[in-house]
Length: 185
Image 1 (spheres, rainbow, N blue to C red):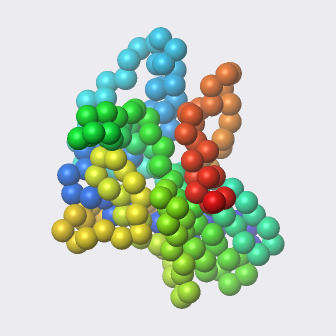
Image 2: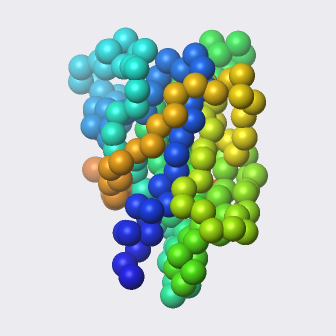
């Protein structure tokens, strides 16, 4: 069996927090952002604020694969992420991800790694993990109180993130290796 059906089968279900202002966008936004840093037209961030739902697709990137397992990063691109003291600071074109390890023989999900080095081990057959996304700073978490839960998103389309360089700048930006650190530690 090729890896793509397993990657598609185990794509996460995302539950966004109430009060979310910046839902995921597609890779075109990130490319525009990197081009704009070179001095071209500015991005109108207010065009992406208060979207009512995420923009498709969900991205993936295969980190490692052997005969028995595949480690895949599921990636979302946010137009803006609030952070810092009282969420005063933020950055445009932020990339967030989690890493899922899939057993190719049993066709089950083995574990999920999160941004804060937490992981979740699955010992039962499951089809799709549920990933909770905190409001406006977009940290992926394995749990969240029910009072904070908002929109549930089950992405249908997935697309290969295709890490590649454009001139001197990587399309994915400076923090693209963040998901590698999570999985490797």
